[in-house]
Image (cartoon, rainbow, N blue to C red):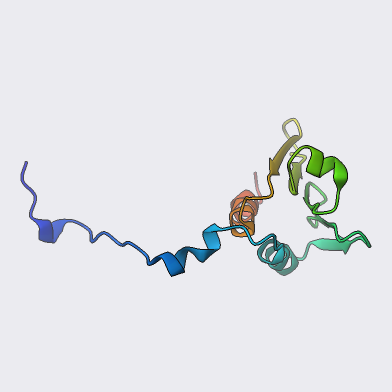
Length: 115
């Protein structure tokens, strides 16, 4: 099958400068902005860790840059979910995971509140 090149979608290759978000900057901003906008409870500790809980209490997100137990396991983000109709589960992200990726994960997780 021959397809005219005018019918194919254009390939988009962003400049390297446009991909700066792919590198980790060790900043919790994108996640905290998201959960704050969603009305979650946000509590920061004197040690600079941040704990966030969804309004229904079924989702917890922890930013744990100063938690020695988390660092020993090579994580800085912890997401715990307690579904109403399934077993609780946990997802953790390491120090080199961009916070934008964690925010995207959380956005997808809460996108359908009926689940």
